[in-house]
Image 1: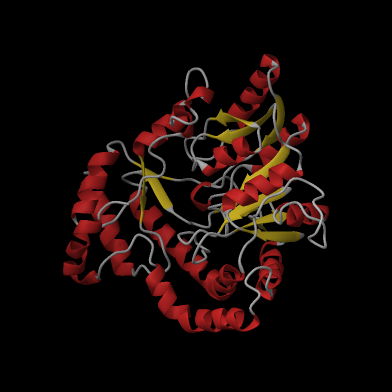
Image 2: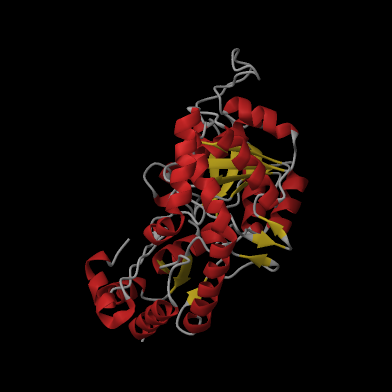
Length: 387
């Protein structure tokens, strides 16, 4: 994140220091409730598998419309759990966008499978269904890998094109696993992220719109039969009595403290989501004239974990807004297929839309505690920088 050294300039304008993500303001609001819930964990002493875990799973399922939820240790663990449960492994191809965090690729590789990088749609920054179709055909023609799964990513909170991707997955007999690490709170055609794909992984990393005070994640399912396998895998692959190993697993559990924090945050989540969407609407109204904000698919509403847009001279604009006290972040400056760990998997000819977005994109402050004056100041800073 950039712009920290110059935050005082914004403060001098009378609007206060602008935070990129303001967890302190949120904590001031919920601290008493969080402390009470953490005290409850200290009192019952079940630091792993405490009652908070089951309560959280039930509330997340109710919130999203999922048939069931398995809480786990991180968003990466959530992806691995879902892939292992479907038997994805060596010799299998898993199709993922190259414009995302490296956890998506790492999860695939850790199962023994091979990620196949897919380009993005230039407007939504999410996986391009047409390019996905082509990559599947190319993989089948090459004959070295068996197409087994596709993992669309709900980048920055905007749901991927699930209607088109689900149609492809059904036709090609692929497991559709949504990477909703940034997607919680997003919707499509009235359904919530967590209920848009057969399985959805999400992250509760502290900086997320719904974040813990440490690492945590969850897997959402539309099939109740998934839950038994997922809960076994997250506990070293053991049976219901947690004694005998009945499948390959690992330590993927969420601890009770993190569940306690998330339960308290869930109480205010919908109010915070409404604030995020109001702020995003203000950004859209002002900044669509000077940049290219992320667009949503038809019928989709973003959860706005982040607010991102593209401009022609990104580094110049970022430097200018940082200089007047507006913090920014760049996700993702290096696409996955250009990172050293994954470069051997880079597709011939590259991924043009992904590479263009990586040169042009940056993210602005997005959290429920931005004031209207701060949003106005941020927009004015971007407008001035672009001009």
